[in-house]
Amino acid sequence: MTCGRGAAMLWLLFLVALLLILGTSLLGLSRTELTVSAHLLNAARAQYAAEAGVELAVAYLGQSFIDLGEEGWLYEHAHDPAFAVQAEKKDNRTLLITSVGYAGNLAQKVEVPATYRPLGRQVLVAGKLAAGELSAEGHVTARKVFFASGISSIDGDLRAERVETAAGATYTVSGHLCPDWLQQSAAVDFSALRQRAEVENWEEPPLSAGGEYIMTGPAAGPLFAPDDAVIDLQETADCFLVADGDITVAGVAPGSRVAALAAGDVILPPVSVWEGSLFLYAAGDMLRSGEEMLYFAGCLVAGEMEINKLHVRYCDEAVWAYLEILPKELFRLGATFDLEWADPEPRR
Amino acid sequence: MAALLPFLQFMAQGWEEGAGRAEAQQHLRIAMEEVLHELLYACRVEVDAAGKNLTYYKKIAGEEKRYRLYTSGRQLLLRLPEGVSVPLAACVDSLSFAPAGRLAAGGVLTVALEVSEAGQKAVVRSAVRPRNLSAGGVP
Image (tube, rainbow over all chains, first blue to last red; front, side, top):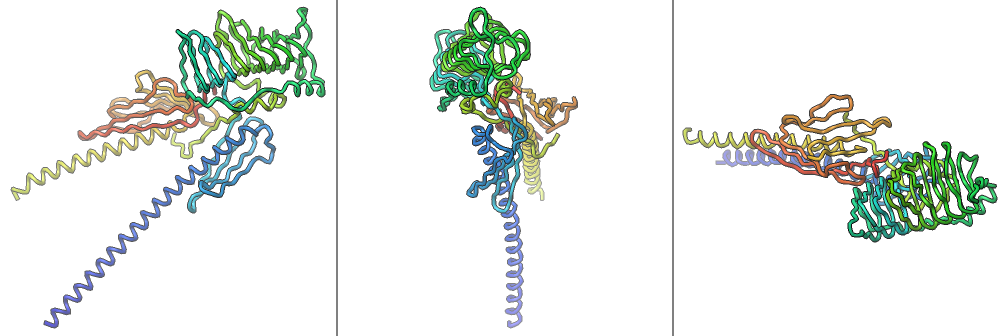
């Protein structure tokens, strides 16, 4: 009887030891699984924190890229999401944004080249826009938009507080239809421009027989017309013109880059193709009427726009050519960056 | 033993069905992961009118390279810029993309994929917002 009791004890001890080993093994496995899951979770969190840093840099530097010096820009965010982001100017168009996100004991680094878009890929920016048969390749921003006639298409976003359509007129938007019209004022201070022209001794374009200042070819520097002006390029030219009156755009030589600002109205050309890059600003109205469709690349900014039969494709070459001279107010219009996200694991 | 035989046959059939389902789901996961990963870094995405073929472009060393996703037989293929096609997944019954046309910047592309293996079907629908698209298609 005594021997039998002892065997039961041994069996019990053996069973307890077996359960202990099993339990310890399971515990170890669970801990390993937990560590792996935590690692994956932290890697994802760190990645998103790094991306948050890139987005912050884009939002902040969109407004201040022009003034960014050689030393670049650095920002550290200690709280969740924790990241350190720095931006380094590669040239006058591009930045390299490097952001490191932190989560747990992990860090993830993201490097994104960013190209500055001073007008944020907006082709038309206006307080009021009345358009007929408009074809825009880029965003359109206006407080009020009225599609007056024909079929209009916007290959980008339409950012407008109010959109109205006349009977028979239709429009399509390939991007987003946003009610968040730009709140920032981009009104150019022409008195400051007048002063600058005087101080820096900007030349005046020659006077035509009709008494208007006329620009027909390349100029050595920026031009200031104290009254109405006409742009009628006969040869390829890069020009910057400020007119203290209206500007009428007529002919163009292919390959020209023209940036022009009018204190009054701007009248767009009756020609069907304007080859080159064009940036136009009108403190007053911008008008385009014609029987033929006008094709051009560039961007237009005005207080009010009344345009008909216009095909405009976003191009900021003319803006780039005169980035240093153009009034900074214009870059409050929604300047942003084109980001080039690189595949961290390229497969093919 | 004789009573157990039908039961074993039933079990074996269940096992085969389960294995087929698992296989189909694995094919589905691999295919969808490959497609979404490819599209995430595309700078231009175009879907044909039927929503069956997708052409996308990626910038590699500053140059735009063209790729195409399509099905041939039951294979999901990716046509590389060099002109050769590589298989991404097998057992694919159907593949569709929406919306048709060129995807706008900030747009979301929906991908639906159906695979089957050993009589077991698996369907999955996912979406991706390619990160490098530019507004207005302007490079």
